[in-house]
Image (tube, rainbow, N blue to C red):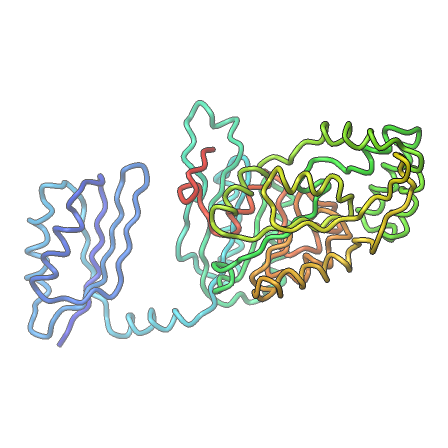
Length: 406
């Protein structure tokens, strides 16, 4: 009768350990049912689940493995697995998989402990924990710009909405972003990423910056803030703010553009997305004068924004064409997806204001970035503790994959 043997090895990582064990199993014509190896700070944890031939005795395998790894000074543990136990383990593979991502300047033991506790409470099992961010030197620990840990979970939560609410509550209580996603084929096959511009790709609202060149700066900023919180209809607020810009000299636009700053992590994110072949787009309720320049600077594929009307070198207080509001952003997202021949599940949308919610809601992954409370509570995911390049972690892309440095 065939036997199933679990071999667990731990100790200092050295070349040749896996080779030595697998050669013994090879001589006994064993099948490898599962294998896992991880190394933390040069310490190895290796596990092999092997099925022996009918005529093979487990004691023979054990007696050959021990001397084969004796020179490596590692610990080894053998455990015979029953067919019933193995069958139960196999049945688990049909259960749904989930990904929980922790992002912060520093991930602490408190973060891991509380997320683990709510995971157990909702009857989910942690299969694997992976660090996606790079290694941080001790002298830079306090000033780390980002840290990320990904937990792979398996099972059916007893109350999914409550599980997600618990994660959101913990995120608010602690200095950490916690993102939950289903681990499905689309998560590993996103193809298009669309962005709002103001307060997303850049760290300010262009219309507010333009208004600062008039006497209406404070008034416009208050209207903008209310609109982004969803307290005022976007089209209505946009018209109000535009009127304050009437008569502004065209030269002011260039002046304002040169004082705009890209959001933390924007350049790293865009260069990585471009390297990996993603299509990118700006869908902005701002102005194309600025969006087209940001497009050129970051190498973005598509740009849609409002065309500010200028006559005789002066801003008229109007725009040309259709206003790019929330509904228009959602329409444009669909058009880009259709043009690129991808489904909506393969699209990521990123924004911060209430007018971004329509596109965030239809994208496969909608991310509220440093967003207003309403948007953060409504969007599928939220990032506020790290830069824009933290989005790569939600896509499962590690610093090792991109050669980024923390």
